[in-house]
Length: 206
Ligand code: OGA
Ligand code: MN
Image (cartoon, rainbow, N blue to C red; front, top):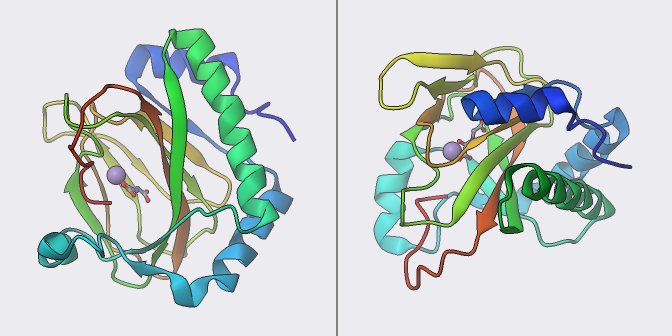
């Protein structure tokens, strides 16, 4: 397994416009293993934002998905993390970044679940640099990821989730949202982070 999917074309996309969409980024067999992993841990998915009690009510209006943070408890998770570790090296080499770490969770959207417009990071308030979203299944309808042009309300791109598609974008630059899912929608949302010594500040709801 290697990060063959991150070719020059995608690096050029990231450089010129801050995001890229890579179809069939991950082998079908790894996608299948990650999906099975989701079914295995299914009862343990929890409401996003749980544990931060004061935010919970707010979060329920913003997002309805359930998440499960990677804990390295399956070979599938380890394989995916290994790919992202390779990706991190490629990004650091090409963009002279000091990305030091990657965190991710599975996300499950049931029919009607959504995630309203948000940023994954705010300038000086988070150390998330790049967002990644990998789709694990292909819903029949809905659940599109809409990415907005920086500083406008205009749509930059609307992405139909498809098993194996990997989307990457600059976390601080793009407001985005997930439209209500038409049926079950499984994905992995992740963030490459940079050490920015911002103590005591938490990331936006996740
Ligand atoms: C997120 C997110 C997008 C998607 O989890 O922060 O924006 O398409 N996910 O699932
Ligand atoms: Mn997001």
